[in-house]
Image 1 (cartoon, rainbow, N blue to C red):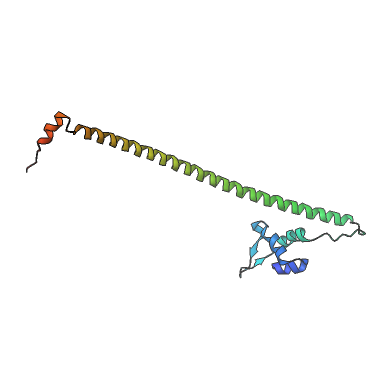
Image 2 (tube, helix red, strand yellow):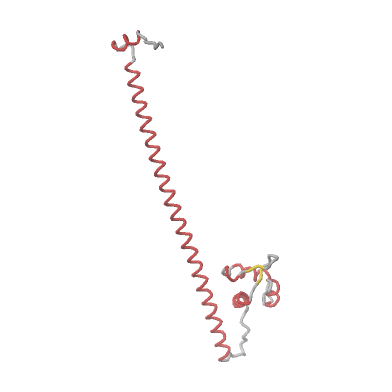
Length: 159
């Protein structure tokens, strides 16, 4: 039977915020919503939250019987199993995220390397262009006797 957060809080005599806190920390497979969009707590989720919220009711005068010890051991084993399952899910999610980040870093490293290579090629071409323009301008200087006669004669294509 499903319950709302308020119903479970009233049943356990704790605040809604306490139940909400523990509910949000449950693995995703234990959380669900109804058709309206309200959080619904199923029996398994309620058991997990109850184990985290409920305080032991044993008093100093009351001694645990063997049946109560066995029951609490079973509950403890269930909680441990649930925690191990939640940890495995978290580790799997973490491993997926790390693999994705590694691929992104590799891709960005390749892009940076390509960018640096293009920048180097552009700088080399600019240096070549500047070298050619300086040699061409020095070849056309008036001090050079071979170029001074050539500059006097202009050839025009007629056609």
